[in-house]
View 1 (tube, rainbow over the protein chains, first blue to last red):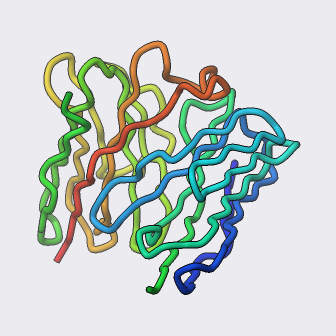
View 2 (cartoon, rainbow over the protein chains, first blue to last red):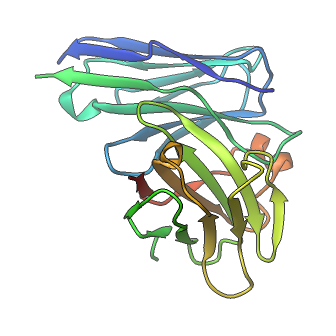
Length: 111
Length: 123
């Protein structure tokens, strides 16, 4: 069974701080996706990484895919209240049609 | 282009009743996924369908739950004889033909578009 564990589960920080969210597995994935979900809404895709070691930047967000394609991280620089939400990683692999979601990290950024 | 449409957004049922949740995929999308989310948790896969065909139902409980995606009309997730433990948010996502399935994850082009979810409360 493929599992994706995210840490931390909860994170409360002040505006302007930096943070990193981790997504770890013992399984290899073809790609890792990161989603953000706001209360009462469905997840919205932020980024997809497909190559081991790949780094993608989206404004203040930096995403990295581990060299072995088993883990990923999301780093947010100078967090803002608008970054508040549930961050979900999700992995896809060749041997399954379904996208496996991580356990989630709930981020709260206080002004 | 309308996104993935789910209805109802909120549904209240008493124990023992039936719940029907509907999902209309994005225009041109032929594959539908259903996921369940409990409060403060991630999304748990339930079932993956294409038109008139269930591809993977490994996440569906063996009893009371069923899903379909007919040739015409929305995909439907049906829960019979609901119990309090069925209370959750149910999300539908769709993907286009040719960009669905395990062999396409590595392309980076296979992404799921989610609906806003249906929140089921069982009293």
